[in-house]
Image (cartoon, rainbow, N blue to C red; front, side, top):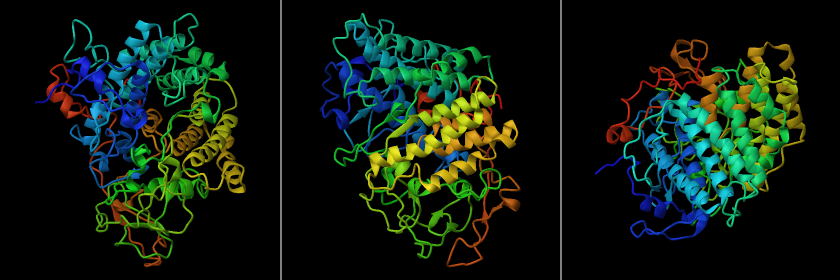
Length: 575
């Protein structure tokens, strides 16, 4: 019998809100016990990352970035996200929603992962005992998690959600308007900052290594909270004047994320049993692989795109993608998009070669997003252990903060030199590659400071001052999109807010004249000069929000009727 995801007894939630992968505890959900705050914190943290990153069927809740990476044209798939086809019954939408609100048992694993119910219990228990550092971190996580839910869905349960420990428990929460939720999240972030800085609280327990983001570093949590505030103010800048708030935050740069190590990143490991690898690594051990690299993404990084960064090859390519072929290798089956050793399929393809198996030859996610293999150009087929999977999930980085600042200067809401900040952001994006590969592939060559990196930074910043403000914004947002590969929620938000980066459109007569997209003519050595155009199509309008999960609408009588995603907008979406 189905139940609303919120109609769960508190004692069960508290018992199931732990994770063996990081805590090495064995909890039987059928024999609940009380859970301490030092266990609830990592449960909430891991629950958050499990539902907003990529999907790994074997050990985590469904990750919404698996859908949104297709919608932001960094990945392509044969499954329902293709052609913006994910409905309310899509398993990643249902699974990530459930996992965000309440602990869910992972597939093929006894682990329970979930964010918001664990965070609510953490806050309540920590406040009651005077452990305000824990309470403050819980509030920051809660505010950040709800901001992402609003950004993805628009209206979501908030004021009545997770009210399961009160005398007047709410079984079926209403959906609150996004514009009513956002101000409360900004207040909650301020409360979280005040709590973690409180010097008079008892704080008999303080977070340490059980804090999977910052290891108990309160200074970095304050920086993260302030940078989340900056991000949210930037996202609502078209709905109200936020210049005062923005300038106040930027006036204290040391209180913001100010270095690579300050970034809000979840560190995964390389352990196979228990499996604590980045879920994006899942295609390496999988027999049937799902995630192709978008040819649109590839073409921009190769310099093929005629709109932005034309003729500039990105030196991050061997860190971002791993090619299982050399330029002269024979493909597993006929390919529809090949560029030397790079093999993929188009978004919206209805071509004859779309559905042929390419598990042994398709290009995969590399070191940077997934902890996969650095591309040494060998063209070797991957195995389950070709990489480590130890790449952190990068939610809000120093590079992101710099791109946000550059955007705010571009919009006239902050003072400063937009080009200088943009250049600094691109430079930090390069450094971030070394940071990630240092954790996931220590033997990979360093990129920052090399001639290729310097040449690239010079090339993508050289024309910044000579182009109008809209083109500058396109450059800023495109570089931010490239840098944030591996986490797609903010990419989806940025595109809907700004219209950048420009995405592939099968109905665009320039991108696909006559309904055909043209792969590189000489990309397939087996067919020199004759790689055929690929028929592509798209019958849906771009979704301004994701549909609400069907499971929730069925069991929650307080839920609204299903929306039309192409017309239902988040309150900050003025495009």
